[in-house]
Length: 363
Image 1 (tube, rainbow, N blue to C red):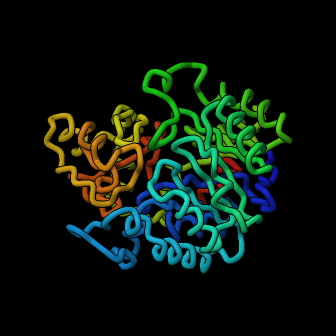
Image 2 (spheres, rainbow, N blue to C red):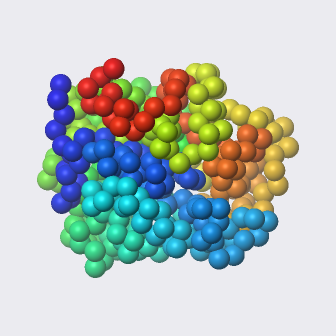
């Protein structure tokens, strides 16, 4: 099967593969810029930009961590990442992933527009007011992430009624993705919620609003998976974890090694201060948390609204901003390492160019 380009708003993605936005610091300038350069859609994660280039763009630090959302989601850091990605990919389409659950969501969306991002992808909640923050930037394409046809219908009705616009595409994420899930623990395991069973109803709902392109995500690993999703009606796929296994991935070598060493049984769902189950690799941090011996929760960065300034973090036993940042810096003792369920399949590091070639043409 040969694949058609993926259209998102005014943008055409030559290879219908969206690289998932992974933070902190897994998909920044080098990964996202290279994916876009090679014909996919590179996606910069907006999470933790105050850590970029050794915290150079965080105006205030406490205990060497960015203080409050203004510094954790650094506008200057974000702009520098986009500028450096553009130096790699030129004027090819470039996206940003901005979680709806973060503090300062609206401000960070504006920052992305001002930095020259073409496409904004948002999950971790239903972004019912997303268009509000891109006023004045009509060319910026908006892509919500959903986990059901019902969620897409809610977003379309709200956007159409309030803003007279619709999503330029939608990412449908099943429960095999890395990081936060759009399902409860129990629902993640249900057959009807598996990606292959979600695509058709979401494509059907998307068609009612004018054939919104559906991008399937969560557990997509190789060309066979892409062909399956396209045959079910998807216009493209989003893949995160597999891009960790590339030379250009911005993650620390230790983070990549955690995935290379992981076995299938090491990748599990865990509680998160964000309020959704999260999928990752069981490492030393998880064992510490289970014994209630994890690092102290201080909520310096005030990263996500559902955490309620550290209250939820204390309940689950870890601060997600600090632990993801530790993983970005290669700290194997206290780092939190997210992965999709197929992460154990990573067995070597290759180039983005080689990976995209494998995905388009097969092994």
